[in-house]
Image (tube, rainbow, N blue to C red; front, side, top):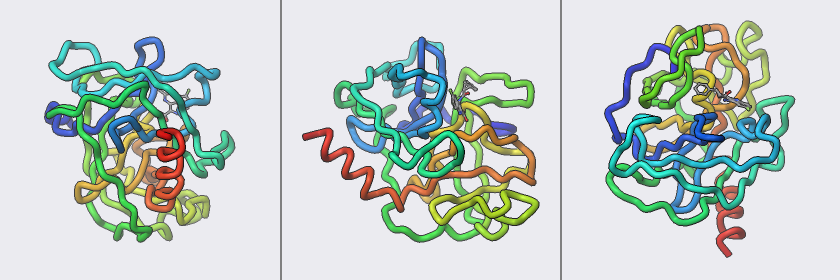
Length: 232
Ligand SMILES: O=C(O)c1[nH]c2ccc(F)cc2c1NC(=O)[C@H]1C[C@@H]1c1ccccc1
């Protein structure tokens, strides 16, 4: 998160850190007791290794009462996701066991009605992604409020030039923005997850390249289907 602020500890109890060998790679969030939603691109350089999921954390390194690292039983990238574009950039992770829910670990509901969030709506995003242009990584969760911009503006020739589909949405990226390592985290508008930060190697903090999110509502049936099939 570029030019955000430290989140109030544990006030975003749905936030997850997807880790490999103890290192934060991407964000994610708890959508059910045994399920975390993130971005498919985050698995690109993991050569098949499964993530571990840190829940209940504010600091990535300090001991905290409800902080716990969960093993992942299975990972389900959306079948339409690929390395060449941002399409269907979603990843479902089934935890090895149900997360223990408490004040610091909570499920975040996601939007099921497939209707665009109105432009200028203020939404919030959080993550342990880079906080400056030299790639400094924060220890504590950062947060930021950003306004939604219309798909037409986001698709302008000088912005993302027609690549933003009806399954994506954008927020203003002037100075304050999501950045590397924030991918997979939720865009929360009115207490509901409307989008997932796409894991593209987009430049951060440049108003000409707005932040891109995968809208969740169009994928509600896919999410329900995977959870139902894997839970048995
Ligand atoms: O965040 C992303 O957009 C993104 N997209 C990816 C694709 C492949 C992939 F193997 C990783 C990523 C990845 N994350 C990162 O590179 C994470 C490692 C970097 C990071 C930044 C700040 C704080 C901690 C760690």
